[in-house]
Length: 278
Image (tube, rainbow, N blue to C red; front, side, top):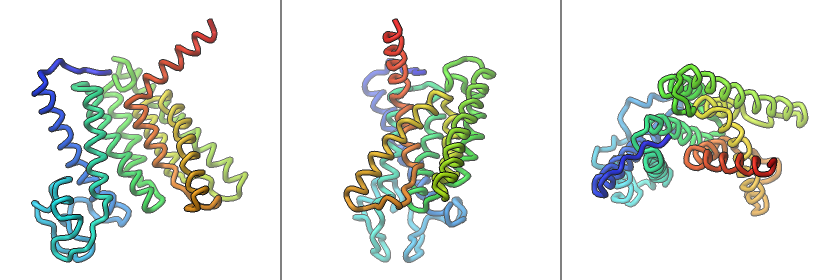
C-alpha cells in the first residue's frame, strides 16, 4: 500500500533527506547492537567507546557517516583502524529506509518495514560475524510482526485487523514450519545440522510481518541467491564444500527484495499463470 502525496520538489527532497538521515542514525545504533548483543552487553550503557583503547567517543566523532570519513576510519585517540562495517551498516540502513519511503511514502506500512529491515540488518551482520541470529531479532520479530499486523492491517493488504492477524499467523507458521522440516530432514540425511535454528525462526518472523506469499518468495529467492554465492565462493577457492555458510543474510535479502519489488513480481507471475491457463 503506497500513500505518496504529490509534494513540491523541494519538500520531497527535504523529506527524503530527513528519512536518509534518520536511517543513518538507526544504522549507528544497529552498529552498537551488532557489537554488543553477541557479547551479552547492554546496548544502552556504557556510552559508545573504542573497542581497542576503551576511550569514550565524543558526540562529534559519532555523527553517522560523516565522522567515519572525517576521522579517515581511525580512532581519534589510539589511531586504530575502524572496520568499514560501521560505515556500511549506516549507509545500508539509510539507503533502505529511503527506498521504502520513496515507494510507500506516508503509508503506515513504512515505519513497520523500517522496523523489520532494522532487525534484518542486525541479524545479517551478527550472522556474518558469529554464525548466529539473536533471539531478539527472531522471536522479537515474530512478536512484533503479529502486533503490527493487528495495528497496521495494510501490511497484509486488508483493512481488517482480524484478517491481518490470521494472515500473519499463517505466514509465521508456514515460514517456521517449512524451514523446520528442512532442518529436521537435513539432519537425518547428513547426520549433522543442515541449517541453524536461527534461520528457522527468522523466516517465521518474516512471515509474521509479510504473510505467506512473502514466505514462498523468500524461500525461493534466498535459496537461489545462496546457491549462486556459495558456488562462486567454492569455485574461487574461498570456501570448501564442507564449509558453513550463513543462510540468514540471504533470507534477509529476499525479504527486503519482496518489500521493494516482490509484490509486483508476484502479481506479474500470477498474471502469467492465468495467461497460461487461458
